[in-house]
Image (cartoon, rainbow, N blue to C red):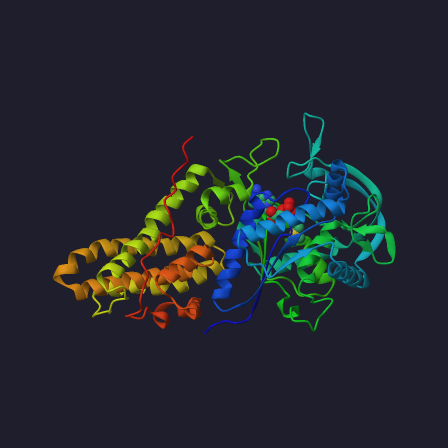
Length: 516
Ligand code: ME8
């Protein structure tokens, strides 16, 4: 049975205090692959990304550049929007936290938390990291030899003392622990859940949720000297975009609660502790899953402006090709773990899996059909044991990848697809259709039919990961436009003998490094 229910997936919303980097691109590509997978599998998908435009970091950066925070946000948000187009992201909306709809939703959520008795006024004194936009306990910080105090993510912290509203986070400790217990999938991967649970078990203090020493943010209702802590504002974006709070009869309200918040491991605390506590307080349904991917490292090193190894995704895409980059990042990195990549590694993967793998399989089998079968998909004669085994492996991929993608084991879904490409290579070599041309042309036709049918299914399944290249592969096997979703996998969409094919053009060229 096809599941056509709503499926809502989000990326984190990025700070537009600079241009997007490869870490942002990675998160968007992975989330896009999941969104596309679910869409092709029949779900009613809403995929959201956007920018987190308020806060002290934005204001400080703007000041350094001598422009207003709004100007900085406008300039860099355009870069993030361009990146989404460049990466062929299929997001259904792009939210900016400076939009009116978002201000409204934040006021609603604040009032609901206040009505629940969870907001009170006091004064805050403690450590704050502007780069993380996070408050830290003294015990989480460390004074280093350079005389600077650093937070747990290695960013400098400063002492803050100001009047502030607080959220009664301490009241939610037991409910949060009960949540992690009752829904072990709420936080993934498992090591992150353990980290979050032990943070909560160690004791939660009330959280400062407003600031008074700068003004770039959303005003607290009825107390305009206070602006909301940027994370209250930022997290609310996920619900703003659905209209659940502000337009409950609207077309997108059905998408809340979200199925997946895809985020990086550095912001798990906000999503797995603060966010569910805010929602519980406001009496709102909780997202089903928060999944933290790892960090992308450049040749094993963290990217940083000071190391000068920050990679612009546009350069990588221009150099290697978009689908190639999408594929390599998702295949190479165990999703949920940190991943290291290098230009050599990307080139090797492109050549082994794409050029020599699926590209070669498609071009060898389809060009034989064009040359030897009158340019038409041949008849499929009686099937041998080998043919049946081959088709069964391709037919099984839908269930296998559905399971892996459901668990967000994106790399394993891809590995399963590529394993069938390798199996098809062995099948093709073993059946040697070129040798059958003279001796048994009918049998040759059957082998070519089976191989082309495997190519068809592989192409359908690769669409979430490499949308444009997969479409080209599907053109090569003349798959009709209405037979490209997952309902056309397996027997339901088998190639039709007699369908004319064009001579195949290469979809995945070999990568050759430019002369130094
Ligand atoms: O954290 N590798 O924004 P952000 C992989 N505005 N992912 C990375 C990465 C890397 N090297 N560097 C960053 C924020 N990311 C907040 C989010 S959500 C309500 C607010 C990921 O621009 C990071 O983990 O610093 C996060 O998920 C996303 O990029 C945006 O990071």
